[in-house]
Length: 133
Length: 107
Image (cartoon, each protein chain N blue to C red):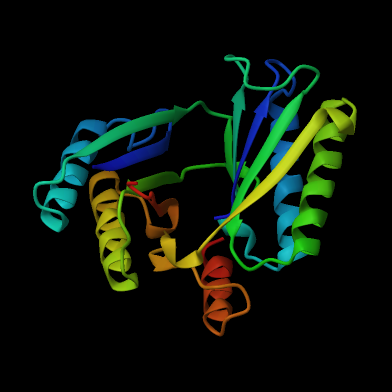
């Protein structure tokens, strides 16, 4: 956690583009939130079932811990849309990005419950993320 | 009814042990919630379609949907046991296992 899923038009991204955008997600999410880089997951699915709206090239959907500010969530969404548009070579307007927040205590990673953002336990968790990298 | 939705990596130890993982997860759920059945599904991510820290992922993500509220202690114990099953069966580390519980209102 965070877990970002990108639904893209079939063939929109090759392997190097997927890897590059996955690194963009790490840079953007961790740059905005300070979360450990080793906890950032990005999964891709090509839109074989027509889930994307007409004219839409990609939908990026992030599940993140509850407690981020509206400004942080907006910055993450805006920068991810820009990054996906740039990596894929498509208009940023054809990329939709959204985040949904979940309570940290409902997720375990690295064998420990995730801490709430800003809590004292978060520093220990960040050290765990750094040591596992 | 409990539901496990598992995202695993193609050609990984987890992908070669889905039967054992499904059996162990069902046993775990039955032990915690006797009489409540559990279903289990697996999605295999092709190589190059999932990344952790920007690199090819070796992680499994196990989402558990439970149609009732859980206490913090119950959640921690349950998720800890899911982690233990995963590391024991697949040989992966704790850090390669993400477990999440989603409460769904049964009404």
